[in-house]
Image (cartoon, rainbow, N blue to C red):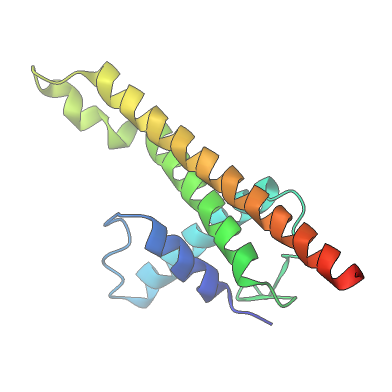
Length: 142
């Protein structure tokens, strides 16, 4: 079994946010872990054909031995889900609407482009994962 913490670490390496910087109490740690687990579940739906089952046991460990490649694909999809949530959240952008020299349209365009880039990168990593499986499969058959 592999701990979900490995996935969370891979995800946190991909993003630059202060959303989870203050994990000073047990409650804050549990809240962050719950949030990461929700992102994992959303990412899981996007990963079409993993090599192994990606289900969890007790919400702390994978039931199967998940590879580093699968962790990386899941982490990229978690990043995509995180950015998508960030982009679509009015709370994250409404404070900026009061500035006169601020263009909300430019911000939203930039945020949407960032989300699309994250999605393309996740899909690209998933395709690379499948190619790796095909090459490995071809090598073991010969």
